[in-house]
Image (cartoon, rainbow, N blue to C red; front, side):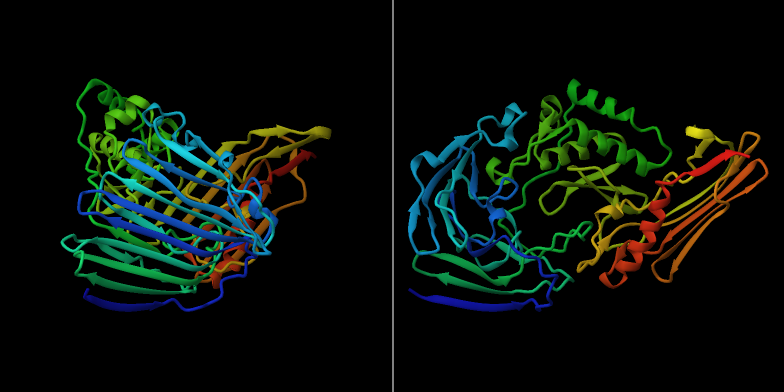
Length: 499
């Protein structure tokens, strides 16, 4: 047997993200795919995870149970071994009554997926310091492979092995998404050819990868990901012409009421998020085949890819130029003028620009004079709600932010100005006198709020400027102070009482 071996190494610099106390550690994670010449494939998975803290086994963690989803129509699950290795070296094999077959939670509320199955393994003999071992194989009646494998997990990984064996005449692509963020760990890869059975095999070995950061509002590409594919699933939606899909288009067409196209595509996206139930099933269990827009609309449910196909189809029917995209084909790109925007079918939120981070600035100039609408309080006091949120504010809730940060924060840039005068009923006076607050951090942003009474009128001037959408860890404290001060006013009112 002749072997040709090629070895490459990628080093990710150790940079010491904030030390988060892990609940567990993966001693070993192994992923192996074998693509057979007869059109079938085998997926072999193994993990050895050591329990470090009790909460790794509690209801909100996932180490005390292992769940494996499979599709009996074309997948056959074989459990190779499941056991617990206690701290003193004693091995406890899982008893048969700890294997429970059930309908996956992800497949509920959608009749199209009620044939799916899930094996729940309830681990036994667990204690601090024990190692839980799970090893199984899934044989599939197809050989398409399209995987995105995150190289960082919810707890540290001491060793991860990934291997793909495939016929020599098949083209299998693989790469690691480049990240500008230095997270630690090391990665080695190798490619070998076996002339005896005319196959090739590539392998990746990941060593000492720290646990993934868990900070809110992180960049989407913060985690390095290994991508493996031997073909691209077809996701171009064929527009279904029958009456049900036409009704879907008409129904969503009613949502297009704004002269701003961004608001219209957001309204249609929100409708899909709210009204099409998400069944979060990995595409491999469906043979990488998505449902048609008609099926999604008729059943009111679907996978993330199904929802993306449906949303793209509807947007195109409404005159937009939309396409399904994303690492797992679960996003929709929509062109407006010369800019492509990304829509997430899993949740609502700000619409991001596709491609490199761009500091698109939301601009608002609001002016006017209004009769004051007052809330009546006790003892002759009244409240004027003059600091309500302005359209275009960053969708960052400062109450979620920690005191320190190690990863960039993704927000939005804005330049908002409001100059409003409120006319008061006769005889009312501001309690505590005028209000003034301002903060200016050059290169990050500024805010200014003032409220001053003159006779029967109160003039409220507010301005918020955020200069960039990506905030570095070095800029984070100033940014958090700026935005927290601004948002604190939104919870306040101007207190008035009779003179």
